[in-house]
Image (cartoon, rainbow, N blue to C red; front, side, top):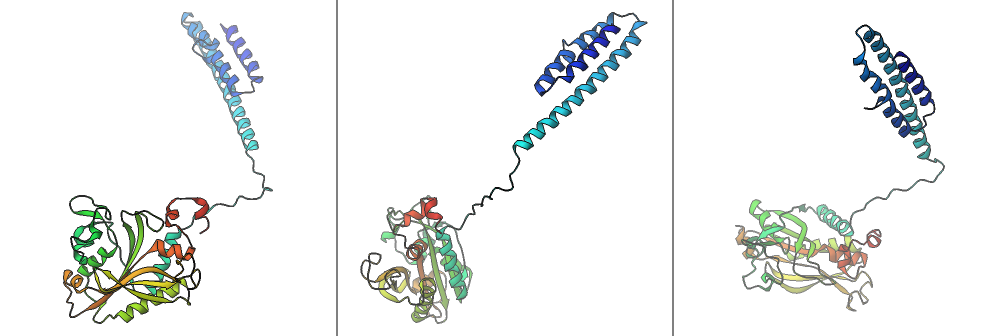
Length: 338
């Protein structure tokens, strides 16, 4: 058995010299250390030795096993090192190649315009207030003096949910909430998402709206015109002209729709403005006394004005986009222009 152990050691050490891959090393390991390996078989036979022979043979067997284990570990380390070196060589970076410019994300064009609108009104002293997208009929309609038979409350205009809730059709409900929690004077704008059952080149089911409200002991219609004129000229340029046309909104009286001179043709008339030279951008008016009564303001003590605008409409005019639906098609060719 002594001679057999020595022969196994010599044979294994010689075989290890020719191993070049980890697969070949594993195969050789099984040949000697596997369940039916050569060294394993010899060590299993030690039980047949006499008591006198067993200590000597056992010591030799352990020495042979230790020598081969150390040799296998050495070869394993060598092969792993070679494998890493080959991998690093294959993945090396050529520092002479031109760099790859990273692609940076940008704010969506609608968000860019919304931020500009907020900056303009903040500079005029307005605070930014937000509120819930899911509203009750009371805040969305009743408190805003919108009667139960008003067309805006029809199913084909409003997304109704359950238990008297709905997706807000404008951000005006936040004005009611703000007035319930704060006494005059009040000067706020309310940006946010709104929802209506509408879809064409100038409407989408979800859109962004900015409402404005100013309440004080004396807030005049001429001050409303001054605020909106300042806003229009900061957004569209100092040459922008503005006109007010009589209109009706349940929550303002008197009410008006506000037009600006077409930014495309400078008021001369073109396809963008339908040849009129004017483009409608928002609605406005003096706050109706019925709205003040709903929030326990005394209409004899305070007055106010309100206005509201669609952000997509403003963005379309500034960027000359003919169809606002393109804002939400996620076409990277379009979005990269902004």
